[in-house]
Structure formats: structure tokens, C-alpha cells
Length: 371
Image (cartoon, rainbow, N blue to C red; front, top):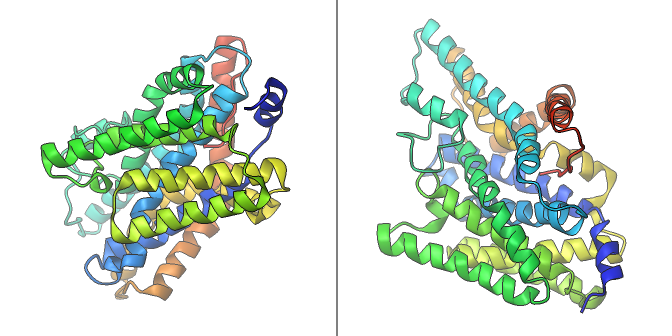
């Protein structure tokens, strides 16, 4: 059992490996979406690429883990939900709006050039997207920056986060039971979606995406509680990391279900965090990976609009885009290259200004979280 002094020491650790992991998850999703968008039944249907779907659930687990670390393990004051939501909005909304603006610019230019898109972009859906409602079953389409459903799904987790904190406080002395309950909740959600709608949980995006996001984020939150008791030694920690990766990869390839993805991701997060805290970290915690990890949200939220604009721009000059391993790599590299300047010139300053405005309004500082 973790002593109070050990728990305090652990709470002060910054898990750099988890920040570095975000970069790899983001570029895997970005790489997968090239084939998904432009050759869905060919290159985009390769099993190795379709594993990119599971990366979203791993993001949910990672988010729940880190947010619980910041707002539960590291906090000496009671959880403040308005401060939490203000920090979340500061983190996600500026780039979220820019992505929507890029899609809007693409549509306006297309109309001006007589190249209206084949897909429908309802204005009513845009208004709903502005309020993160596209993962609550309220939009007609998912055309307005379709990967952003995952951001809206996380909003479901943010709304439920006070429940996560309550569960963490009540089950602090029984962390493995809490983790089992969390995985069981994901299994229950998966069963509900299948029995009620014949829907696979890993395909729940605009319909029931928020329920998926909240339940899987709870796995990450429970994993952070269990992390304090997770001390298998160095060799055991590496074995846990390998087991987590193996469970997640095999489950994704065979589509065995989101609960096992949650279990594998929970093992990964706990193991990487323990390696950072006790064993000098991993290559994911190195300075370069921290820089790239900071760019991950820009990569994730902008890649689909950028791909759309690039491919349709190429078509205007007579170049047909063919999705394959090399062109997908090139498109992903372009998004990564522009993400650094955008992060430094737009995302980080905008986030700081929103946070400062809220802190001035509330009269106190709010917690920082990288997700």
C-alpha cells in the first residue's frame, strides 16, 4: 500500500513519456486518415492502418489518466469544475475554431471557383459543432472536420469528470477494484450499443460518441488511481508495458472490442508513468519528444482540413492524388511541419490569453494540464 509521503512524491512527477506518446498517436491517426479519406476501400482498408481507430480510444485513456493526475493526485484544494472546464476550453477551442474556419474557407473558395464539394455541409451542423454537439447524436452529418467528433466525445468525459474525481476519492484504497469497475463500465456500454442498435462501440462517433469517450476516459482515470499501487519493479514495469501494447495491438487488429483496448491502454499508461517516476523515463520523455508531443493536438485537429485543401488544390492544377504508403507519409509530414509554427504562434498564445482572462475573472490560478 502506498504511504502518504510516497503518494505526495508521485503526484509531483510530470509524466513526459505520456506527452511524447501523444505525438505517435496523433501521427498514426493522421496517417490512417489519408487512406480513409481518399481510398477507403483500398489502401485505407488495410488492417494495419485501420488500427488507427483504436488510437482514439488510447487518447481517451491517456486523457483520463493525465487529467486525474493533475486534478486529483496533484491538487491540495477541492476540485473546482468551472476552473477545470475553463482550462479545457482554453486548451481545445482556439485550434478547434481554426479547423472549422479552414473548412469554411475551403467551401467559400470552392463555390467561387465553381467547384462545390460533393458532400453536404449543413449550416445547422456547423452551429452544433461550435458547441461540441457532434458526438451527442444531434448532427445530420460529420462533414465539418470529421475527426473532431473525438474532441466532442471527450467533452462527454469532461462533463462526467466530477464523477471520476468522486470515484477516485472513494476508491483510493481499492484501486484495482476501481479499474475493474471502469473496464466493466466500458464492457456494459459496448453491450448496450450492440444490443440496442447493433452498433460496434469502436464505430460510435457522432452517435453515442460522447458515451464512448466518457466511459473510456474513466478507464484512464481509474488507471491513475491504480498507478499509485502499481510497483512491479523495473523488469515487471517493462513487462507490463509490453503486455499493454500487445493487448491493444492484437485487439485492434482483430476488433475484439473497446474494453480490451481500455485494459491495454491502462497498462501502457501506468507502465510509462512508472518508468518516468522511478527509472529515468523512456525515449518518449526526451526533449525532442516533448516538443513533438506539444504539437499533437494541432496535428490531430488540423490534419483532415489540410488534407482536403491540399488534395482538392492539386486537382485544380490537374494532379490526381493517389493514396499509398509514400503519399500518406508525405501528407503526414506536411501536417507535422506546419504544426510547430502554428503551435508556437497561435495555439500556445491563445491558450495563455484565455487562461489569463479566466484567472483574472476568478482571482486565482488554475491547474495546467497538457491534454
